[in-house]
Image (tube, rainbow, N blue to C red):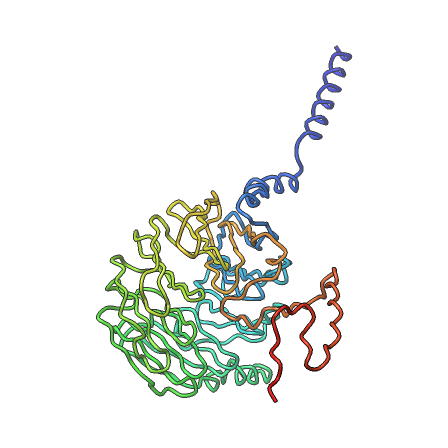
Length: 441
């Protein structure tokens, strides 16, 4: 009896050890799950694409999801619903910092960035971090709860509120007060001005060289001098603005509840062309790439218009939103979340990728890179294949493109044939069969 029990014990231990050996480790299991979610190299190559890198934002997958994803020319910022913020380097994918901003689960707005800093509003506080290190430089209590994301220049920040006010703050003054440990008490001294409209501010402000533009629910578009609250111009619309405003090359592209797209000069408010009637509600931001503006009306497909005339160049049914663009291609989504690749010239479909598992697709109008994320924070960056695509194409700031060196050709050009000796004066050139006429005396 004792011998049989010993044999059973040995068999049980052997079985447990074998199962332990066969069972995957948590790390390998996690890697396998990610391998099933990430787009395969084979699929990407089929469409002329390569995977640059992938990463994981810091969040609690049991309770958090991605609230916002923001991309500029340098970094990717992932914001979780819990207030955790993670930043990645755009090109390498290196996770450069993470931070917890504001109370847990506090409502937040998408981050905005300038050359050196990242700004994030959560609850009624505005946080400023070093964009490349994540160091918290200051936090400011706002006079009103923001209704939109802020807008930032190199020395000012603007935000709109639910009571119809637009506020301007001096970034240098905020920094001075923070270093003196006086920002909490005297933060109002950094406020440059406040401009009050009739109703709630509905669009993030647009900052140009000298003015700030924004829309209000009072059916008006405003242009205010950035340095002081002086009204430059005001344009009244028949219906409220229905989507965030786009600014490009001195012009504002504005979608309204009347289903029209308008184009106005940002300096004086004059219309550039007649409104374009889409026939459907426009809730998504118009996207301007080169001399094309793309709009995505609800259930209306994709319209490609000329930025010069506002005329329709082509239309494609079944497209719902913008993801990215290169010189020749346009990357979009359909109603089930697939990536649909179109030819920019005429809207022809070049291919479709089933990537519906990526519920967060950033609409990148700054570069030609594609940034996709799952709701649980798995992020992947994709670019077009080819040595000439290793450096990004900058749509908004082409001056950022690197100046590539020019190399001499490896095969030397053939030497030029030796020059023929000059013919004597008055003689015909060698090989010239034409008759010569003697000079008359």
